[in-house]
Length: 72
Image (cartoon, rainbow, N blue to C red):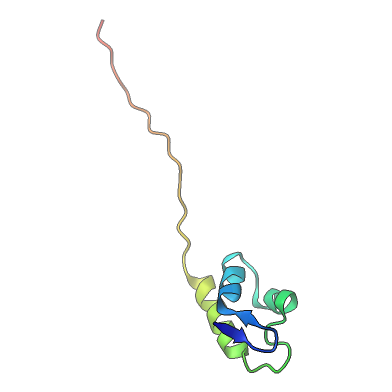
């Protein structure tokens, strides 16, 4: 859904930026969110905050070594 009508920025764009580590001010500079009329700022910040606070799963590649005894 479009959050910032003035700059035509969607919730997906804000979420993607937040998950990539951008601060809200960076999103404002890069995409113009909440820089014109300002009516979207509360919603945009809420989306940004929600996406920043969600833990991201980290996958760890572990090598499993099997100890096999060979009886000769």
